[in-house]
Image 1 (cartoon, helix red, strand yellow):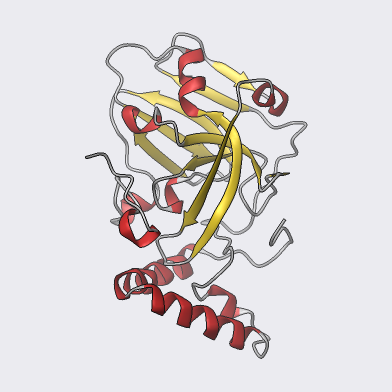
Image 2: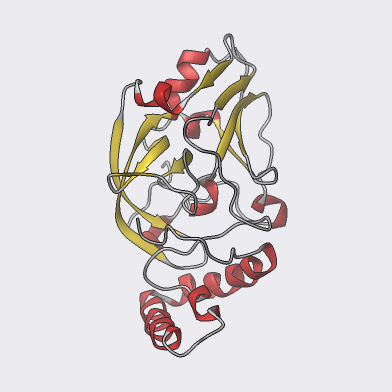
Length: 236
């Protein structure tokens, strides 16, 4: 899997700086992304610091808001579905593989400007898990927690029930590894990557929408990718 190696994690301050650069990149157009990708490739051959890998361009970039990449082996991993539901669930990786599966091919677009086109994802629709748990009346949102102990995200209940919102364990035909947020992560295909919570630990049904980690720094709750990804999946 591309990039499945131990490396220096990209911390929150660096990511905040990249988000500023990425916003300008998206606004300026695709030629800026291509130029940055060329610069990144040229610098990487002559940059012993490794900082050139932080420039948005082609290929994956791996972010963490903590001091490292957490890891839970698939054999001991557990996913909790909790909150205002009729039946709380605790799911293993085998449990997830035994549920109805969905495959999607979608670009992965980071808000900093880089994109990986045509990624093959496979997993279980979030709506399937919500239905099995039984969402109680009057609920408005779903909150996601990472087992890194820090990261959170959230969606409205309507967003969470979209067919292109998955709990995924397979990327390009292989189990999702540590750097990509495995063994299980969220995929919110029509939104920027920060909505797709890595190292997924818990799914909680809530009465109110609670801002996620990056929303507390001013980023959009409704992070539809829009035209910068060649399409617009926002509801009309």
